Length: 241
Image (cartoon, rainbow, N blue to C red; front, side, top):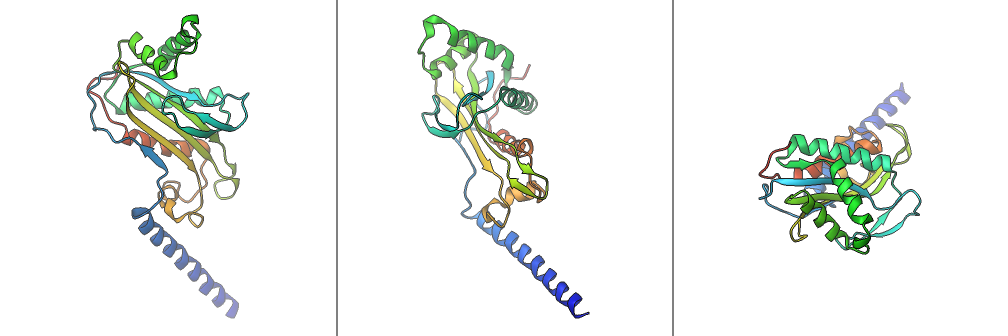
């Protein structure tokens, strides 16, 4: 009887601690919480109609070793890992489908965009052309106002299950909306996240809530990033085809 009472007291104490962690996590998250994503603030509606959706490129191929990557669009140095073509293709397809349904752009598909992109970079006359100029040329070939392009830096699957892991899922990617005629970055967004438990990081209450307290797969973690990115992305004045 005494042991049962002790267990009951211990359980109540653990529940109280959990609620206190959630409460203080919420306060810190609303106040000085660490930002997991960064974007360039832009008007909610841009004066553009037609956008070429290149989508994502891999910062490093499967033949490369993890290391530093110089982003040729932003000029920043980013830590990156090898990314498979299947991941790049699937993420780009998801991005295109989401933009078609949620944003008011007239879109040129990734298939068309990558055809033009590959043709430009393989041309002898364009050897050494800076990436930003390649992007501009892609936009001009379709008479588009802007090009949507970004990089995937990390896409690491969890090792474990919903309730116990050896290694948490981790993703990192960015996206840029670049004006065709002058190469100006009109909007950009970066998502960089490795899931942590609430006790490890009280600032990350948002992810804890969205995951239902579970350890997410890399696809589900990336989906959270996509939701944040699409919410931040401005719309255009055109209409999706």
